[in-house]
Image (cartoon, rainbow, N blue to C red; front, side):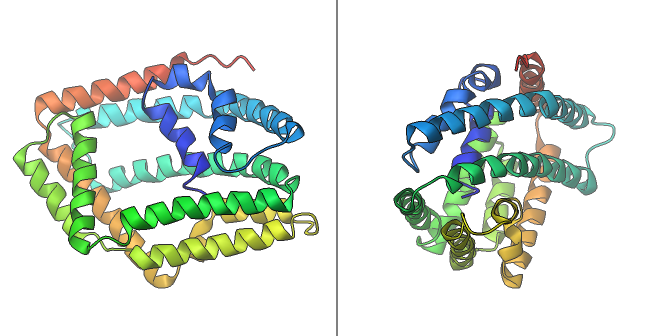
Length: 282
């Protein structure tokens, strides 16, 4: 669930029409996205609308300033050629951005729990049917392919991201990405098992949603800390992949041309400015 409805909200802020335009539309975009997973009745739509408005207000007033400040600092660090970023600094940025994501999940989860507590058994079944359908699509795209194709896909996605933010990668950057893609540990079936464990726990909670006095807390805990359901083997591989990706970011930063560096910092500063210009009007 964590990589379904909610992750789209963050993506909307970072791509497409721009943060300011999209942010002002979230009160109707979020219900529109959620509609793909569960059909809501009139009262549930009203409840969702009320919670979305409150959460957007919280997010605007308490989070956007931090987003902007962090982006501005990141831009300065990327521009500072006298003191190039080292692993620890890059790791701190990863932790900070991941923390923003976790806090968003922490705030939104009780609202989602309250909404799902009102759902009928048919609605819950509809939700899981749709999530399973998306899961099968992800399995087909990210798990069941031959290893060589998965490596090539990872490489292509990273090259696409570099092209978007920096412009066309240099031969050295392409080589670094290719090496990164080959060295990543494949999670494959372990990721599916991890996903299944989360789904099993959420199914149990939703079956007992009207009986468990701590339903909201336990539901929130699953969404905020799904890593607790990872196997030791999965966690080791995940940590390795995270470490490898941070090192790739450092390598790309080192290999950037002056034109790429200028383009990247300009885009980061523009994104920070967009966050700063969003008006929190309640």
